[in-house]
Image (cartoon, rainbow, N blue to C red):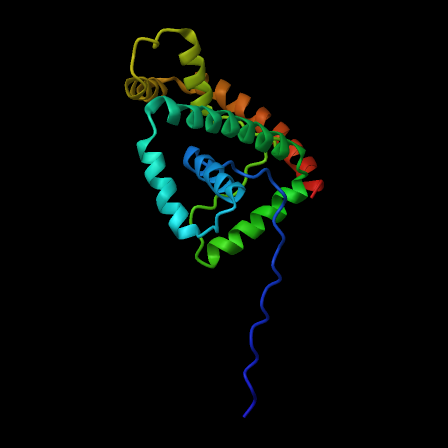
Amino acid sequence: MPKEQKAKPQKKIAAIPMPKRPGTSWNMFFREHMERVKASGRPVVPTVEGAVAAELWKNLSAEEKQVYQDRYKVSFENFKQQTKDRLQELSPAEYKLENQRRQALRDSGKKGLPSLKDPNAPKRPLSNFFLYAKHLRESGKYTDMSLKDQSKAFASAWATLPDAEKSKYTERNRIAMEAYKIEKAAYDAQI
């Protein structure tokens, strides 16, 4: 009887280096606490020091905690900007590779790992209806309505629009779609 062949494990795809997310205000406080303990020369027992630090954190005043929260906010804004800059630097091939890696992780059960969206990729043009809705929105006639009411008004206006008017938006969409296909093909060629 022939042996069953095992499926070859897929090669792991290395993650693209990205900026490291900063620790929370509590993490900043805890790191400082651990550095103070190490500097004092006492033996460091993480479980004990974790409980001590938690008690100290709980007893901090709102102003003292605010200092750490402000530091975290600044660190997080820097992190977001660095991440945005890093994503701008990636090539289409790197986006594809990273998204394949993320998909493999999702397939293996990892949750909360979305695909990256390339900000340099060409954007798909608006459909006929959305071109019309954009035109109506820019007219200023619907500014006092809620978004839900605007959507209903646009849908009913589109339904009653004569075919001759609809064809203008269809033609604009067709031209934009042709330009998009050319841009998309050039973009895909970079991969």
